[in-house]
Length: 473
Ligand code: F0G
Image 1 (cartoon, rainbow, N blue to C red):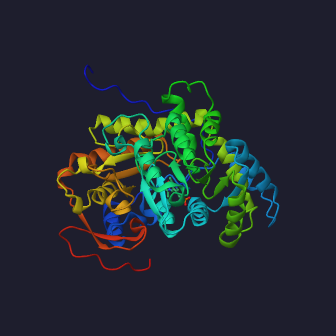
Image 2: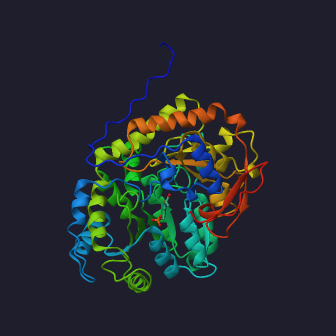
Image 3: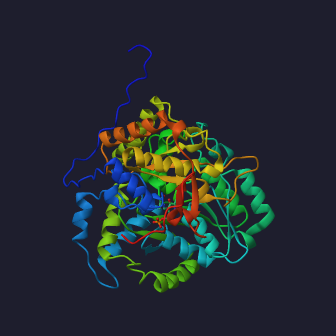
């Protein structure tokens, strides 16, 4: 039809299906009851109450036949397992960091790093902290500070690298505080809190130069490093012919070390690590690792998990896989754009972030538009998403002067799990809620825990009696 938008095309999956898992299909009444029982917090839902689960892309990937086969090669020796040897060699080859310590997931790596580098009064800058990252910075007595560029807060800006660090603000901070107060500079690849947005190699190079001029080490949060490298390859001049691993290596060469939740680009259901070039720090990390996680050749994991992680880290850097992966997120963005739905532009690497303020303009900030939208998407189609805004980040880590904090709803796409028709179902669900957006009611928080509130808070629709306290299922 003349004038109608071009029909978006989904990417062709570079895999076929060997094992299937049934998807639940709760009725509207069941969904309504589930919402009440859950205190309108979708973390409290049972998975059988969810039709399409976009709560997180973390630990939710489908492992490959090679990874499942790898599990059978588990050598469950307490010390010196051959799976550790393979895992360590893979991480060293990928990153060049000589000291590699496995952990059970990303936040354990964060705990080790921050508790061994920060002290009360320290400040840790990061483009934008993820919630567990800032919680661990605080747990170590330090203050997290977000220093992303201003465009990161403008949901309609098409800036190709909205994960970039504001070099002026970082320089100001480092000049004022110096290495006595700032034990490390961290950069998150990609910027999850700000929409799964990448950091350019140019910006990362400048950050490294700036940090090193103050003799402050740079650490990377590399959970989604391969998606970040994919965007550098696609968008940053001069990198289009390079491999993902070559771009990755260019990023890692700038840093002293990294933390990783391998539950993202490592394509495993559990696992992570912390890695560094600093031998003295590595010794301290190793002692903490033994105290909190386990012996350094397993770090809180079964040895078979290390095998799956070694294989997953390689598969996650495959270009054909990444083209499909980022293409699937882009496909969802195109379907939503055709329906006029407001979301953070450009689409991110691991998900779409709806702009809750523009989606529900009739709701005031205190009516929690993000949470209201999360609830409504579940009510409409059994789609589980997560709020990334007032509740996850209320009053934390700071935004630049004169900039409103983001109020988003993340549709995180698990890796290799859902097909194009699932993506279309999600787009239809979002579009149906958008069509009746004016009727969506606000929410209020009725129980607010002190730390990491979004996981356990309870809510009620505005204008209703508070829901009764949780009862064990
Ligand atoms: N850093 C970032 C940027 C993350 O996105 C996460 C987890 C972590 C660290 C912590 O890793 O979960 O293995 O302990 N993000 C998940 C999410 C939970 O839904 O985005 P973890």
